[in-house]
Amino acid sequence: MTRRPSITWRCGMRPSRIEMNLVSRKEQTVNIASHTFAFGRGERLRTENSYKFTVDMFACLAAETGWSVSGSWISDAPQVALFRLELSLGETS
Image (tube, rainbow, N blue to C red; front, side, top):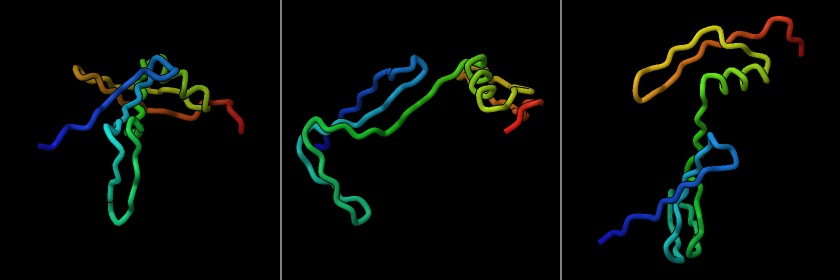
């Protein structure tokens, strides 16, 4: 019988960030594509960093890097957004 891996998640330092990890239940060696990886019991392997943004958070992030949101589309559930960005006028590098 194959046991499912232990999967954990926790909120990172930012409230909009989620980290996903696999946690080794025992000491083990794994072979993947001719490479060998050793894991100790309880060792974590980060599998995902997911960032979730509100429209305002994304617009602020874009502005910090010299862009402005010139258009956006947000789907119904599950909410996914698409933004059109333009270089902010008057910005110099």
